[in-house]
Length: 229
Image 1 (cartoon, rainbow, N blue to C red):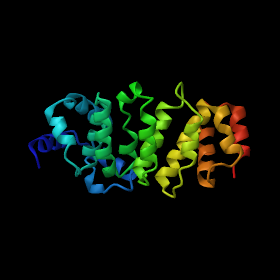
Image 2 (image 1 turned 90 degrees about the vertical axis):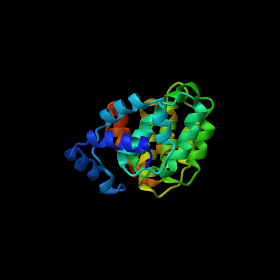
Image 3 (image 1 turned 120 degrees about the horizontal axis):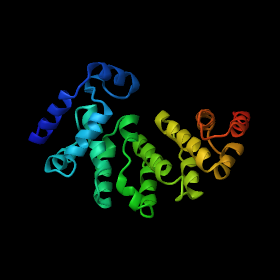
């Protein structure tokens, strides 16, 4: 273990909450229970802000894999704060193969992507076509996060619909994407439901998530319920 790893790991254990650790273990069946320290997200984000840009942080994210769940989450938050686009992509490509749970995957939303929306889609396509569960999930999440408002294009839901996977965490992200897309781009996306263009599980989970959304009108919810397969 390097000095940076040891210092950061000690900081994480100082922030540990045993009750929270037990709660977290129940939420993440893919994560080894003994790897969960029990550090709350606000504390991790505060630590990431403190470390960001330091030699210690650079050393920490350069050494993989990590032993603990919270080390992965801290790594994710440090990637979020990288200001250079190319360096951020490199850090993601190094890190994503080691992501083994939905929570770590979903918390990475790099701020620098907002300034590179024209460059990002080809990279998203690489992640989505990788065949690796959490790379696919992350790629779909990036389409959901950055391309459902002003930068929306009909090709993006087509990309998500074309993803074929039996992996639960991919299916759930596809459903989350389409439910969010229905809230933001209803007219462009409703044909995917009307025409049964999604697999049955994604189709029904999309409807379930959409009807729970406050951004979907009551009329739209009633119509979506009628389309359940």
